Length: 211
Image (cartoon, rainbow, N blue to C red; front, side, top):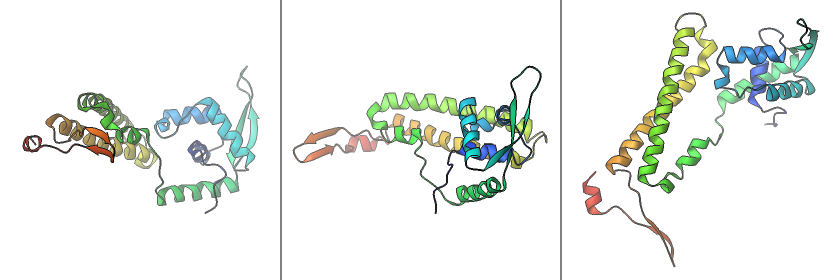
């Protein structure tokens, strides 16, 4: 498969907005935030304008008018092109079909959980669990106020629902791991370097009997 000329997923968000109507970048950013899409896409003015310029450069979108609101600077309004529409649909199809390695930072930290020691590891995970629980509660409120109230079709917020399920799964794993650290069932081996290489201690019979 040929490498896509634009891979920044913020471009996907821009193309998605332009399915509805032509927009200028300021309106794009405001709409993404109003719809809570900033939980799925990293939205800031600098990156958004850079993304719009890249889309224009590759012929995926094009300027259709320049408007002025009062004394504010002129704003260029953009619309998608036939090429952009084709790439948009192909990109979504590819992302849905093919899992890719995304290297999340949390997984990187978990791979070295042992470096903290049991007490500090448990404390760190407890704090994360609290923040996850708060995020889940806030997201449920957003979904209740939008999809639940009938103001927004579920399909328009489906990625928020997907994220919510991922956070709930992560919270369940985090709480379970905290419990295993505290009751000793997640054993913390002691590593030692010898002439033959690294070795680590196994649980003693006494440790095993406390599980």
